[in-house]
Image 1 (cartoon, helix red, strand yellow):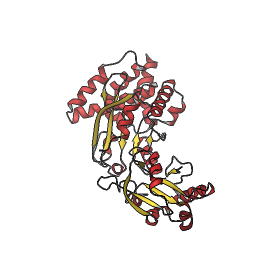
Image 2 (cartoon, rainbow, N blue to C red):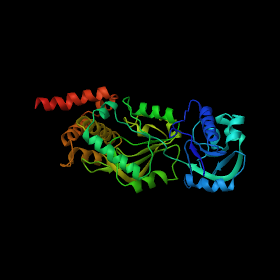
Image 3 (tube, helix red, strand yellow):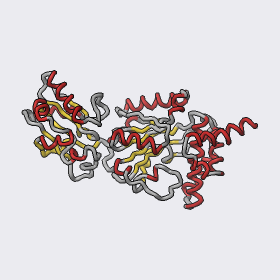
Image 4 (cartoon, helix red, strand yellow):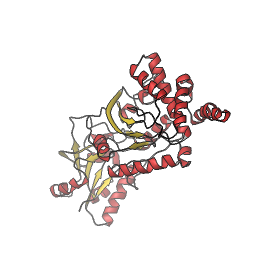
Length: 368
């Protein structure tokens, strides 16, 4: 029998503001169960072969001493965790702690490795995607759109099949504020999946998000998604990965309102379609999503003479799947974003965006 504790928000006892209390709680709990030692996995790490490998470790490392296992120092994974837990990444993400020793010494959490014997064995690897940011406004979620509810239910089923655990965070303060909020809570890398993104293949999703080992820490990573209205397949609305280090490398240049491109040193595009960006779940969501994307494409085509942006722009303006929901809203939003791109991109709050929608779609419909 082994006892395995993960030191992050997946544990109900975890309190990032009082890490020592968390550690002592675990030790007291195991003492009450008459258990002599327990395993602690640090935030942002996973055991290479899954928690079950600890069975083998228990047989090989029986004894009263607390142990810390090294991480492969030949990769960027060490010292890339967080400032809060950076000390641990010099050793490893996995600890075997003697209960009595932990209670007796009451070692501060951030100096835990100094009290342990170091085992010269690579036993942990970086868990790339421990958190999910979901960027749908609270008022929209609470409105109970049947389209969105169906998408969210189906998406959760895919997550369950892919055995992916995702923390849900919703913000009504905009993308940047949502990122900052989750970044402060988790102090870790961020996997961003919009509430209206529907992954399709659990096996593909798991292999792309869990098995990839070439993630550069300074760059944002983007996977493709499918547009249900015009059938375009590219990065718009797709899954995005923001390494913690990239969060600290905001760029100052005018990037025409594209938040993803304003973070890090650049963008790594993975041309694999992971699902559908089902943005057409309400009239407003459809209209403002089309308006914002077309505004960005319009400016890119005009100022950078971007031929790819020009081709996508033409598709947004002319191709509409008659079987998709809210086609009129998508068409209207695309046309407005093309005519007034800077007005759309300067509307940086939900209130301003709703005002645009009311004045330039609902008013037109009413007048007609």
